Image (cartoon, rainbow, N blue to C red; front, side):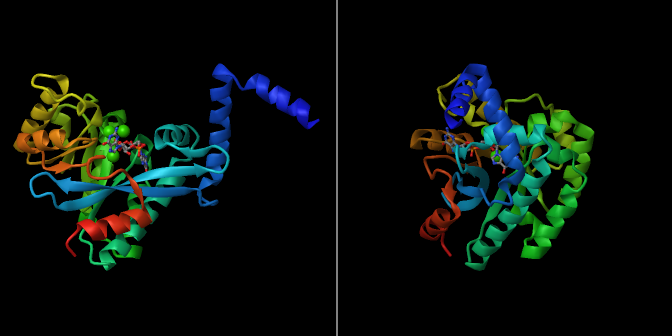
Amino acid sequence: HARAGRTIHRCYMDGQDESHLRRLALVHDLQEATERAELRLCYQPQVDAISGRITGVEALMRWDHPLLGSISPDEFISLAEGSGNVQRLTSWLINSACHQLAEWLAQGLDLRMGINVSAMDLEDPGLVARTRTAMARYGIEGKRLCVEVTESAIMHSPERAARMLKALQCMGVELAIDDFGTGYSSLAQLQRLPVQELKIDKSFMSELTPNSEGAVIVSSTIELARSLELRVVAEGVETTEVASFLAQSGCTTLQGYVYSRPLSAEAMTVWLHEHLQV
Ligand code: C2E
Ligand code: CA
Ligand code: CA
Ligand code: CA
């Protein structure tokens, strides 16, 4: 019996069918991932481009699936969006992030934390209240949190996104436009949003030779940010050469493997104590 099952299983598990089955399995298992404590947050430091001082961390979600191993948020967040699981994941995220941040603040580490939200979160009328509740529960001030939203998530429904982000701003929470340069947000749209930060997408970091696409995106984003008085964060900084180019160009904050890969909470705690002046 079991052998027959395996044969059928194998027949289905190729090509398109395999990825279809994987998606089905993941969507199913995602329902219980939070209760089963299979999600965790990794953290990656953000560094002041000039002084090298650590300014904060970005929280990046991980799903340790019991059978399939570690699954990337690039895969499971879109599945969550398609299956009504985003709210559950984001609630878990906000609570976990505030909890960890409170712990680090209590240890004397002076940090801000970036958290990623998706397009569907911006359409969730309960998000603001849940953020407020988590902040109150863990004693987190709004200025400690920065919500990272992609251009495309905002463009999905700009009016509604603007209302939501303004409500977060009223609580002191900051806003970063993530993957900046990959979408189509106009200056007019940016000015209508309570933005404090632009994050240049890592796809522009690989070749930063003069007049390359990356270099043009970097310099025009910095110019835009200057005129709107915003911070510019470069993500995906992998080499010291790129880091010094970005610092010279006027980026305010840098993030990438050259400083640290995303680390577990435990490993990041050790890293922060080694690198931060308490
Ligand atoms: P993102 O917000 O643009 O995050 C940056 C991604 O680049 C992360 O991938 C990070 O691990 C990776 N990265 C960091 N430094 C470097 C580097 O120097 N070089 C290279 N090549 N990559 C680097 P990750 O952790 O796999 O996350 C992928 C995406 O998933 C994120 O892109 C974000 O859009 C989304 N995501 C992550 N966590 C969450 C979450 O809690 N909620 C939601 N809604 N989305 C999340
Ligand atoms: Ca991000
Ligand atoms: Ca990105
Ligand atoms: Ca992204």
